[in-house]
Length: 561
Picture 1: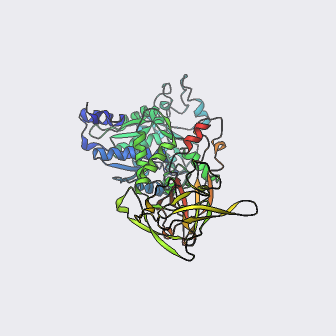
Picture 2: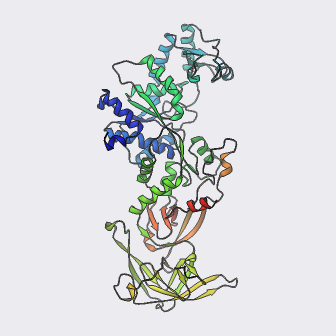
Picture 3: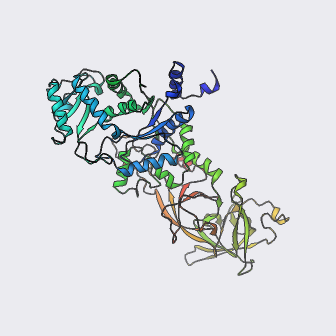
C-alpha cells in the first residue's frame, strides 16, 4: 500500500473501492445540500470542504443544492448568505440546484407510489400517529386509514395538493413495515400540508415533501454518486435506499449515502436552532456577530478562509463524533495570518511617554518592516515625535531583574526607533501614573548601523506618536461560552454558560498608516494580536475586531482551573 493510500480518509477509501469495482470515474458527482433556514456554521464548513475537496481531488462536479422543502423556516436571505459563504471559502459549484426544482417530479412519483399501493393518505392527528408508531422494542400498529383504496388515496392526495384541506388534517405516508426494527421504516410521512409562501415557488404548492423523501430522489435526479451526510442520518440510510428502490432505473447512476461524524467545536454551539435563539434573544448582534460559530461571524472577526479550510483538513473526517478544542482552529488562524497580515503598531491601554531630551516640535519618519514573513510586503514609514503612547503594562515603576520592559533607570528599545531610559514619572492626586519621562540615545536609531544602534537591549516595546495617532474603536472578543461543551448537558440550558465578558469595547490609538484601512483588512497589532477592520467602519470612525491573540492564553487559564 502506498503512502498516499494510507493517508486516505474512510470516505475516499469508499470511493476508491467503488472505482476499483468498475464505477466510472467520470460518473463521480457530489453535492453540498444545505437547508436555507439559517446561516452556515463551522460544522458546515467541514462538510463544504469535504464535498468540494472530493470534487477537486477527483476532478468531479459538485452541486450546491438547497433543501428548500419547508417554507415555514426558509428565506432568500439564508440562500444568499450560504452562497456567499461557500464562495468566500474558495469553492465553486458546478450547478446551483434546489429541491423545489423537483417538486413536480417528486409529486408525480408519489402519485405512482399511491397507484402501486406503496403510499396512502393518513387522516389521523399527529398525536395518534405518534402513539401507533410503537417503540424501539415494540412494533407499531397500523393506521386505520392504511388500507384505503387507491382511488380514495389519489383523490385525497390531489385535494391536499390543491389546498382543499387545512394544515394537519392529512399526510401522505409511505406503506412499508409497521413492525420494522428501524422506526423510520414504520410508514414514514412523505408529504404534509403547508399553506406557506415558498421563497421560489410562491403559492403554487400546498403540500411539501419531507426531507427523507426529497433527499435521495433529488440525489438521483442530479446523478449524485456519493451522498455524504452526518452520522445522525445513518438510520435514515435504509429509508433512503427503499425510496430509491421504487424508482431506480439501472441505466442511471444510483446514489450511495454514507455518513461521517460531526466535528463539534468547544466553547460554542453548532445548532442552527440554538444559534437562531442567540440572535433572536439578542445575546449577539446578529448571525455575523464575531463571537458566533457561523462562517459569516468568523469572516467578520477576521478569520482568513484558508485558515478554515486548513482547520477542516487538520481535524479530518471521522466515524465518531467528538469535540474539537477551539484552540486548534485558532492555531490555524494564527498560522495563516502570520504569513499574510501586515505588521502595524497600536496602543490599546495607553500611558503617555515623554522623551525629555528629544527636540520639541520635531518629528521624523522611521522605516518599519511590513511583514518579516513576506519579503515582498516591503516597508512603510511611521512618524516619531517627543510624546508617545505606550502600553501601560509595558512600564513598571519598581521592577525586578526579570522585567525587561521599561522601568526607571533601565533601557529598553522602542520598536523601529531608539533606545530609551526611564527617568521619572508624573502622578495624579490618586497616585496613578499619568506620564513617564525618559531620555533617548540619539545615536541608537534602528537600522542606522551605528555602534549605539547595535547595542544588545533585552526588551523591545511598541509605541504610537501622540501627535499622529488615530483613534479607533477596538472590540475585544472572548469565547462566547465559559463551558467547553455548553450543549453537553441536556438538563442545563446552554445559555446558562454564556460568558458575560465575551465582548469589551475600548478606544485604541493607531499609527497613521491605518487611516484608510478598509473593512475586511487584517493586521497584526505588534505584540498584541491579530485584528480585522469591521464592517461598521465608516469615514468618521474606524472599528477593529480582535481576531485572535498571538498565543493561546486559554490553555494556561484552563490548566490552572
